[in-house]
Image (cartoon, rainbow, N blue to C red; front, top):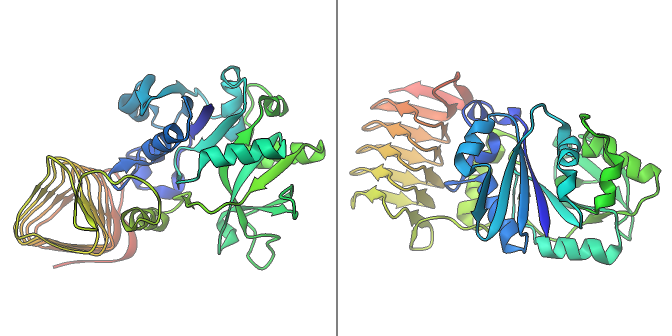
Length: 354
């Protein structure tokens, strides 16, 4: 089985973090989002995955190369010189898809059963199948109208909840037959939701929605990114958290150094080569990225430290997302902010300096 992983977009809603790395490389539980996707696909029998890259493409190419083998799956990255949209990007690589194949976003977190999704698609005899997930607030998603047999009959793009025809969101996870690509013109910016799917309906093609229980988050905002970390450490999404498990809720990287006096009050993952100093307190759900240094007497509450962060002696962080290599000064108190070295701070709640 083959898959297309979409990874060319800019991820602008996750700025300022995506000013430093492409969204697919943003880590969840210290593993890049796209690597969670690779593992999911490989686990469910995908032998070949093709990935389009564009925005900050060098970062993805440096991480995985043009071709690599991950978990027994061949992964091939292809640079998209100009953005072609979700459908246009797949059309550019159409020569690789000569059988039923899967499309999944490389910047969303999910544990969907890919084998079951494909089996459903084939059982229905569909040209295309879309995985659907119920959402509370439809204003941030494209929603889909389906009949009792699961046939898709219409779409709304980010409707007001009071006007939504459905609460079933388009997850960006699809199964297609190769013939579906005939609806996409070559070398043209084309989007599945806006351009291709309406054509399926107009042509009377068999187009169905899959509604089984699975986890999905498009990680479209900083708050959603923080929630995804919480879900990963809480076991709400079926992914592997790296490191040696200590008790129920703590994972420590093999090369990490954690002082015996450090106190963990909640769920935490500490990455490789990280250092957690004397009398450090971590409470709630905390992610400490690889190579971070949390110095003595610092307090970290419900926060995410991306790789290379330095937290000064006695500093206090609460509800923060701290970007790559950021330096938190000794004694500094920061609440509810997204902090990066290359861009201005984005406040989530408030910030004070002690």
